[in-house]
Image 1: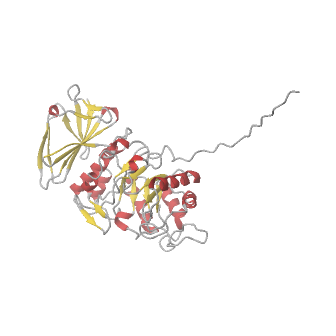
Image 2: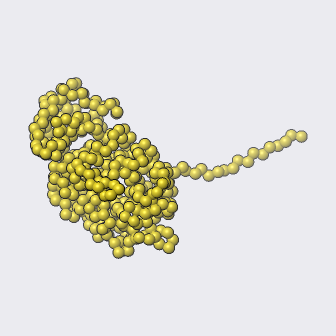
Length: 401
């Protein structure tokens, strides 16, 4: 007698593996964050005023999208169900109301929290509440999450950030995930598939090249930040960026230093997150922040992070390959007095061996465009000559004629 074997095929539902949301932050995000100027002294009217200024000052037209509330937006305690709630005095109408207002302006809304038990300022952190908090963010129509690293004890950074990534994905609303663990755990080695950007340094402060201690940690000026990490540029690209922290443009440095600071964040393909009070910003600050020719360097679709080409005689020269065989080049006067500078194109082999890009000035002539001043400076058939003020910058774009 033949045995009849029945094979039962069980239809098992396919579970989608958690991941970060793709097709977000294909170029570095542009926006504003409350921390540098306001700390935890934030409220609903301030944020609405900032959103209004995005429109009035031309920041939205220049490409800025995100308005991000940093630490201090929530109440000191979760509610009876363990949910985060907005501080009822600072934000009486709640986060959804604020998100709706920002979205009505055609902008995007971001919030802050922390991987630890408490945020850096002592508010409720997300440890143990990741999925619950992610659902709250989705219900409030949040577009961007900055996720800090205070009060984390001995937890593993990669694991902690992966948990929040998975929670955001499970909540179902595409949210840009900004990893903020200050570069302590070398996120450039593991964060590409977890977040859309990751801090590579500690906190910035509004000075040219200084360090300011805060007990167990310190803040660093613009050039301390720039020089803090080596060999991280190769991991940057569309959807995954090295974040050199929020900008201090307009927060007390000279206009020249602000220009250099802004130029470098664009060259480094860093997110451009403003940190100043836009309600009182002077015209020169807004002129710098809304310079679309400079911003275009940051937003170039190749997504290559720039690099230092030379550093001699108090002059730093930085290069950034761009799409269509174009290049950005930035000359920064590091000295405390003006410099007359001459650059001979025939004496330098200019290229980016990491990405296999070379500036062939022997077989091509490139038009030289001064992107800060919106004027042409001739071409590479002749030496480039410039007078550059103290801590100031000449930033050019090179295009084949």
